[in-house]
Length: 225
Image (cartoon, rainbow, N blue to C red; front, side, top):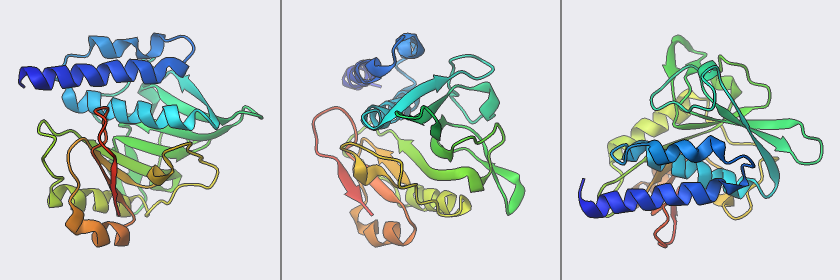
């Protein structure tokens, strides 16, 4: 990783701190400063999460729920009970409407011994510590590119499409309300790089979207699918 790449990652980390100001204590996200800059995939994934939550926070109340390990998020696939998650609540009733989890393992009903861990998963309210595909409202993955001119690989898109199918082609929920990022209420494959525009029809048929140029450098976000 070159000096320019390190500076880019530091700028993402700075954005994460700014985006998470809505969390009253601030303590939950301070850990991102201690994450080594070489963990670029993880930092980018967390940037995507914070961007989504910051936008959802206008309509919903966001509450951080600790896991058995406290306010810790998984850096690789893990059991839901161990890690923190976000409860997305109704601002009026204070009742949970959705959950947002990072990297937790999800069982596939048709293949009980098979698990899939999406980078991000929106789950139904009240989903327990052993989620199944039937609990999933949306899945999302984040693919960091060192070279921001790199396109998403066809294999990456097809792999994510299979994951969406394994989750039963989830399509979100009408009560999940974004402020400015309404186009992202979908099964999204995020990248700070470029989209593969030739696969627009493939993405539509397979109920997913490619989200390109998704970072903090001022480029216009590109949505394919």
